[in-house]
Length: 339
Ligand SMILES: C=C(O[C@@H]1C=C(C(=O)O)C=C[C@H]1O)C(=O)O
Image 1 (cartoon, protein in one colour):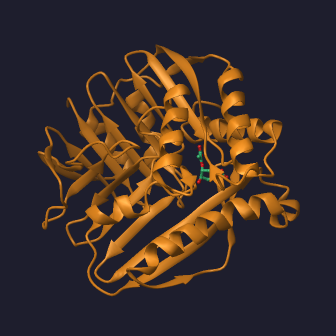
Image 2 (cartoon, protein in one colour; image 1 turned 180 degrees about the vertical axis):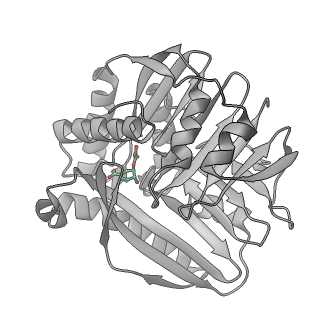
């Protein structure tokens, strides 16, 4: 199989679409299409209808993708350098303190070399990710990306849209201090405020209380939001309305700040899939779009593992550097690449 896409829901249902794909600008009425784009939404036809669609289980995956006989990948990781990230961190913090920005999310990418095995084997871990995560993958002949994310951009069916703010991070075990951490709460509430503002035009927005989401070795603040839509909404238009949220982007989300975010991403050589929307439109009319974080990508034997952290006025470099490491470790554990 030269090209395929995979999407797994938290309830375990999963689909694998075989290429070649037919690319469309809008969701096909019959469903059965994947949404694949990069962070800048450069693809004008991001809905990909596969030549063949399979509903899969962890047991049938190996058969459908022909994984039998392939080995778990071995990756030699390089220690990430601090310089460029430190510079971005300082600049962003300065902009926040001078009130030109409220929040921005720079991304650090760890690089590695594949020394043995097949990265497609990691799809087995993606299929078995914890029940509060969405699995995603897009694989082509020479490379691809895959992961399991705890962050939903939106699910829409008929007149109901559900989304979440997921931001603010800690290591499990220190919950008491986290629950009252003013900086983490601020980082989170910025995302809630943004989503509420963007969604208000579509109908009545209701917000559930801020709770803790524990997943794959990390704890986040999570607030679920839902909207009773005044009229049926087109998922193709909802993506640019919501993406990028300040959980992976910036606030304000004006042209100037987005341009700065793009510059930092370029300078820091962030892979295009990271933080991008990815999803699947079911045949029954439900469309799910998630935020592609907690994953890795590869091209030939080059492997890259990005992670990002929100910078606000109260952010300190050492704390954020540690948070980035925790996030990368969470991905490695999730993909069974580290004990
Ligand atoms: C950017 C990442 O995660 C996002 C950033 C978070 C934060 O800054 O606290 C938390 C969850 C995600 O919204 C990542 O995992 O790399």
